[in-house]
Length: 291
Image (tube, rainbow, N blue to C red; front, side, top):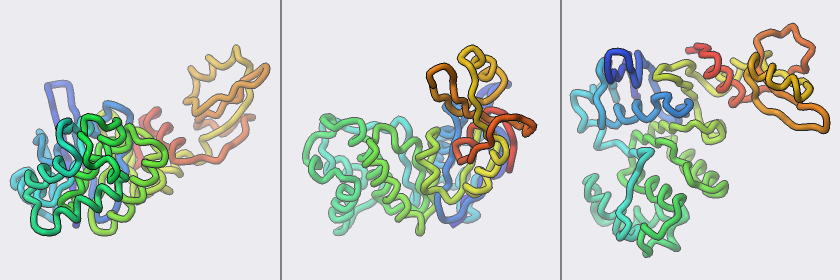
């Protein structure tokens, strides 16, 4: 399995692009798609899912052009959009059976498949209740279940952990890791913790453009020698915010402990250990390109 995105652009008008000259390739495993809200993540996933067509460029799955032949990818696709909707009067069994029919999934093993998904997503106890009575997190898990119904070879998940509590997030991550050996998974999020424990590769985007692509170590190392910590007075804090990318602040009795990003290593501040979130903020705030 190989997905190739080649110089793809989505242009809305003369001056506005949703995606601009975007290229990447991914084989089996998990790609974490990171970017702030409005970066173009959902636009990209909709084009891969053949919901929208790009203005320019090609999208290939196993060398097949899915823009010209969308049915090739649709047979192998699982997709959870950000604005996923449900039928509130149906229970989980009824809804998933209906979604399976839409996907052309059936046969004697369908019931068992649905039961396994409901169990894996901790929905068995509420499976006979109307979905309209579910919490936001439960509805999100139903959305994940419908995306997995056809045992997809390409799985697109747009902000899949919205509404999930910490325990549900762990369960979700474990499920995704199990699936990653047999398919391509693209997981879109603006929350770094959704990505950093499971992604094989990370793509960071902003304003419709790819800023950085690589392994987590490659991305994280972009923040090397750029993260510092210092103590400033409360009056100096605004100056620091204007001059540097602030990662976090800790209020002390008479001062503020500030952790920040700077490319100037000639400083009296204390160098800090850096992580993926630091690199993400450095890359997106400075528009630093590392592809």
